[in-house]
Length: 186
Image 1: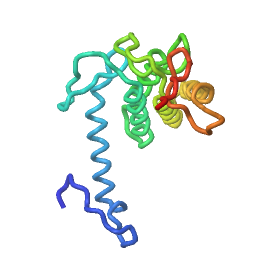
Image 2: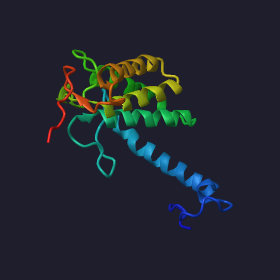
Image 3: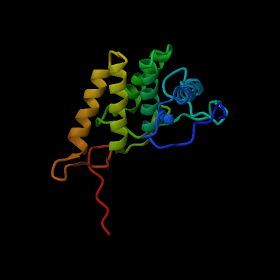
Image 4: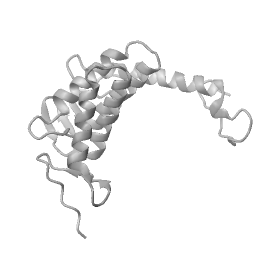
């Protein structure tokens, strides 16, 4: 076996199933640590994230989408929960950015994309709001003091604006001012 390659899949019923081996778990942890190290360069000195090139260097521009923001901070909360140092500042950075920038102060909810302090895509997507909920729940587990507020806000927005009681499903998106996008009629 090559050090950086996972073992080939095998039958789960076999003794010593490869997903449960120490070698595989060590390989996964090594991969996770490499990702955390790589993406730790993405935090801006101010707020938000740099988009990184393949070599890890920050790319020009300040474009930021809600899903990448929330997933990044969820990941660093997991790092904190795994007992590794250095994630607290990144979690705090993310919680502040979600609350102060992606949060729509005029209409509530979280806008999809920003460029610096300017809204570039003002749609409100259920997917993005669920990721805000995930990031805030992870931050709560990591002990962040603002997590409960952000989590309650995301839940309230999902319940009030996205939940379709009649269908028993979440609607996909709505305009910035709270009106659902009209359904596609063929």
